Length: 230
Ligand SMILES: NC(=O)c1ccc[n+]([C@@H]2O[C@H](COP(=O)([O-])OP(=O)(O)OC[C@H]3O[C@@H](n4cnc5c(N)ncnc54)[C@H](OP(=O)(O)O)[C@@H]3O)[C@@H](O)[C@H]2O)c1
Image 1 (spheres, protein in one colour):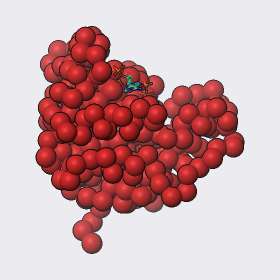
Image 2 (spheres, helix red, strand yellow):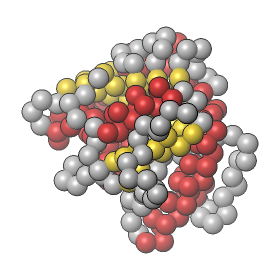
Image 3 (tube, rainbow, N blue to C red):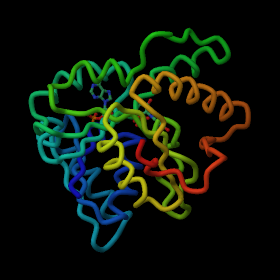
Image 4 (cartoon, protein in one colour):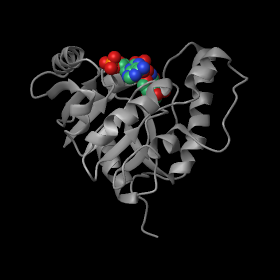
C-alpha cells in the first residue's frame, strides 16, 4: 500500500516509516522542506535495506500521494498542518492522527496536567478535514524510540479510535504488518480523549523509571484486531 507520513522527518513519523517500509509498503515522507524529506527517506531506505520503497516530498504533495496519510507533527503545529494539507488529500483518504496533546504538558508539569474534558486532539483535527475524508486516531501510546529500534520488535497494542469501522480495519491491517504490535478497536473518535489521558500516564511512568517505551497491552482477549460484527 502507498502510505504518506506528514512530518515523517520527526521521531514518531520516522519510526512508523521504518516499520512500514520494513513491511514492504511504499512510504512517502512529508516535510515542509523537500530536501529534508528526501534526506530522511534515504535514511529509512538505508536502515531497512534492500527492497525498501521510500520517497520524500513536500507535505502537500505527500498528502495527495496516498489513500492512507499519517500526521505526525507536534500538537502546536497540528491546526496549521491540517489546514495546509486538507485541500490536497484524496477524496476518500484515511488520515491517521498520532497527536498527544497532553505530552508537552506532562513533560512540563508532571502530576498536574490540565486535561481538557470535552475534546481531544483527534476530534479537533477531524473538524479540519474535508467531507469524505476519515480520521482514525492511533499510535499515541506507541513509543517512537521503540519503533526506531529495528533490532527489536515494538510491543503493545495500538488503540484505534474512529467513527468508521472500515477505516479502522484498514489502519489495523497496517498495524498487523508490524510484528510485535496488535491493534484494538477502541471505539469512536471521542474515545481518543481517554487514549490521550492514558498517554499522559505512560509519559509519567517513563519519567519515573528513566525509560522511553512504556506501552499498553490489554488483557482479556487473545487476538483483538477486527471485532465481531454487531
Ligand atoms: N515521540 C514519541 O515517542 C511519540 C509517541 C507517540 C505519539 N507522538 C506524537 O506524534 C507527534 C509527532 O511527535 P514527534 O516526537 O515525532 O515530533 P517531532 O519530532 O518534534 O516533529 C515531527 C515533525 O513535525 C514537523 N514540524 C515541527 N514543527 C512544525 C510546525 N510548527 N509546523 C509544521 N510542521 C512541524 C517537522 O517536520 P519538518 O520540519 O520536516 O516539516 C518534524 O520533523 C506528536 O503529536 C506527538 O505527540 C510522539
